[in-house]
Length: 168
Image (cartoon, rainbow, N blue to C red; front, side, top):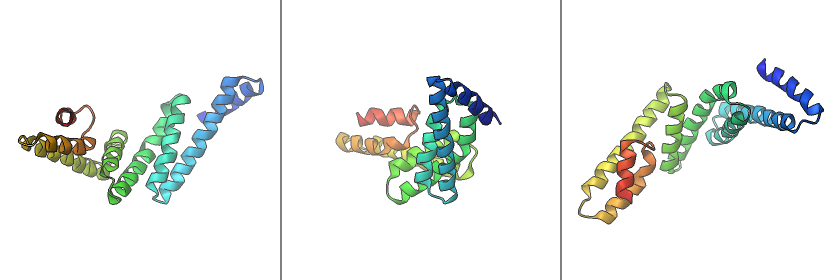
């Protein structure tokens, strides 16, 4: 409904040669194609490809005014991030796993699978902090352990700050 109305108005303005309307139409087309591609990849359980397309749609939605466009994207993007995180974990890219799960949790805090993975990510950060703190006799190793586990901690959290302080 609203997208169609916006398209009609923008097409009218673009026909008059208004650059802003032409950019808006191009962004609208990019948004719709990225959203469709992302949802298609999501149906195929291709998390990394879905994440890439839906991230693109998320960015373009901002230029279109955010709101309804971003609202449509939260659940599919969270699902794509979850699938991408699991794929990253299976490939041994644990930091990508942690970052994607944290972002998925921000978008869909009620998703049971995401919450379960988030707990595992947080446990990994906490265990890294405990290990780094236990290495008081070996500051170089403590620093390496803290650096390795920093990507699991939620930025801004106490665990993150403590790991960052040891990693310096």
